[in-house]
Image (cartoon, rainbow, N blue to C red; front, side, top):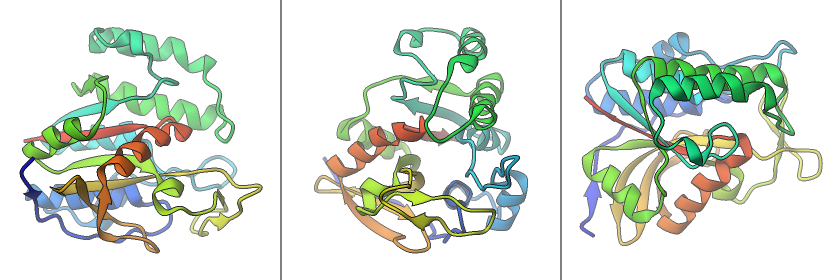
Length: 239
């Protein structure tokens, strides 16, 4: 496969702001002059009723990209919120299934409040005309997406960086590494290049981030392992 290279700006995040940073970088690649602060204000990081910072609903950010004038597709391998038998359903039917599925969702870290916000994001995305793909994600599939444009990927932060799990604190507090009490977390990056079975990513993380080359098998594995937060997916957009 031929090398692919796009110029995506590096934008560094604050605490739990990877979704906003990656989306800002992608928007800027497409010529949408949004600042990081603007995107954070328009799609804020979610803070729960206990004051804990919880990141951002992927569906809400994907809906925001549609509102910026893009067509957007979520390519998901999630089997918790979505179901593989839903592959041929219309958006209207998917919304109906999500409403029915929500009361039965359980997660070791997130309560009903957080799960409701996650599901609401996908409902908004589908209602806004977003498309859902349940294809198998592998190196060839990611390469085909990248041949069209850079895209966003939600990945396992801990597996990518081989770090301990984390304990979340209050808003603006950095997560605390704790391999015993902690929980694994997910992370969003922009995928911007390919060469010799490696993908280049724009990683906004304040500690491990930068323009990084990642083995294709590692990237694919990290996408699937984002299922720990029911976030195993890729978002592609086209103008």
